[in-house]
Length: 79
Image 1 (cartoon, one colour):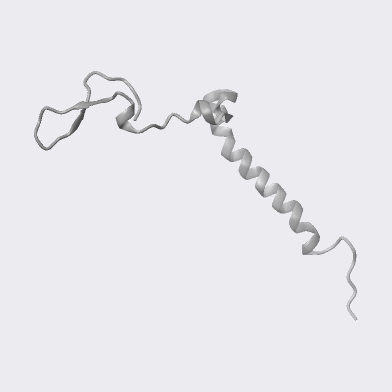
Image 2: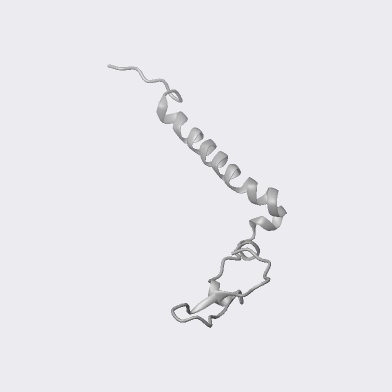
């Protein structure tokens, strides 16, 4: 017969460690967004600025054969 104490052993400590690791991961994942963008960094609508290059207004039809589009000159933006 084996004796098992209540509240002792790996089964009872696994859940708090798992919650701690998940909370730590969440804090490390969100802290750069808050640092760079403030509390607006947590808003998906404000931070999601990724669009297709064709709908941004950064391209124009090309005059050269074989090249369909080219970047417009003198633009200042991130893409």
